[in-house]
Length: 402
Image (tube, rainbow, N blue to C red; front, side, top):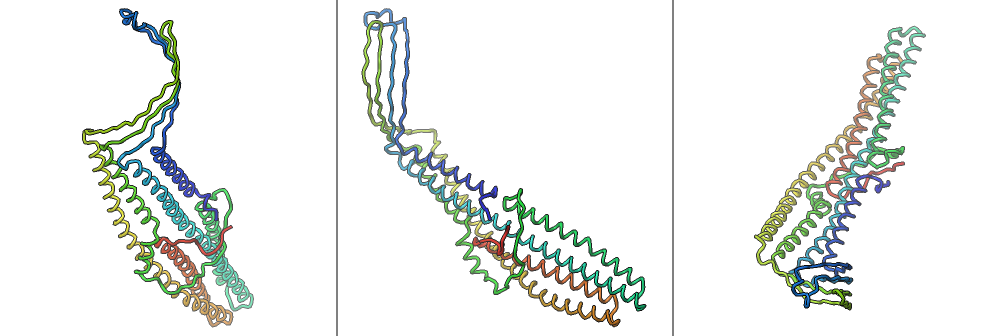
């Protein structure tokens, strides 16, 4: 299955490109900054005329050079920014896993919906064939004089009433395939699913084990840990805003100076350490620290809330698996009994010991039991998918798509 073609996966990859760009941006603060400059200027100041012997009123300057700026010390601000950006890269991987499992969940449900639609169509066709056999049997009995035209008409009406369900389920197959293609990001292609709704129903996972797995595997919880790490680094960054910083600055170039009839040129250079100390910023840094600490506390509260919701989701998912599994077990025996009952009713009708009403009742029970069993199997498989998703271990549906 081409997961990479889904729009969700493309969005997740773009998010990773975004955080990679942020990492490069933050890392740049620790690297040397080189700038080039070049210029030419001419200025005239008539107020210098009184000092014409010493200061010419007009001059022209040409210059070119490069400058270097390197951070030396920032009270850990640059290091914290780089660490936060690195953690951000891991959150991108978390987002990719979150989106991937969400898409697999939807694709799996759509996959089983296609299989269910095929099963419903098969049952509708079988029901139509049964109605055709009953109609033929009614015509034979009428020809032998042991049946009436009323029985023939009733069986024909029942046969015709069974046709719309065949058409309806055939259309359901097409709709399910289109939804399946949409979920896989293949809207312009024809897709289908292969497999069956059969699934072995073994022991149901216990609550404690499922909850432990979810708390260990859910990518959202790992993302929360990374978000907390980023928030902690932001607190360090904001604490350094009102602290001194030291930068190394240097420059080298060439300059040509023309003062009326005098001209000189030559290399220029400068080098030095610059200390910047915002000893009072109007409490701006303190406000940033308070905001970042509040954001950190909010993320931790959100994490605790999410853990509670995961525990609830896991319990609900386990209950749904148990419910669907028990329904499948119960309906499996019901289908066998309904098929036996229908066989006996049809044989009895052929020999005149069963009425048409009894046969139709047996047919209705058999069709209903099979429909309920097919839906129950689909619900069980989807419930298992949902449980795996809530535990963070979802792999995909059992079967294949084409």
